[in-house]
Length: 84
Image (cartoon, rainbow, N blue to C red):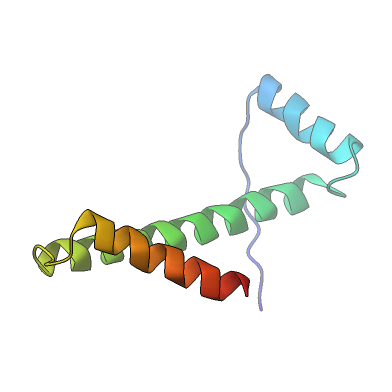
């Protein structure tokens, strides 16, 4: 995978924060920290898009025929099976 060099401008407060993250040992340099933030943002957006799609599908499917009690029973059964 190729790389592209970027120049960014941060506030003094942001620079202090980045440096503290590096000093804490979580990252070796500024670039590693920024790349980690980007990866996490990409992951979060992927999860959010999947959640939005699931909500859209749920809304488009219309009202269900199960009662709340039936839904709870089904969920408890699935959880019990998962825990076994």
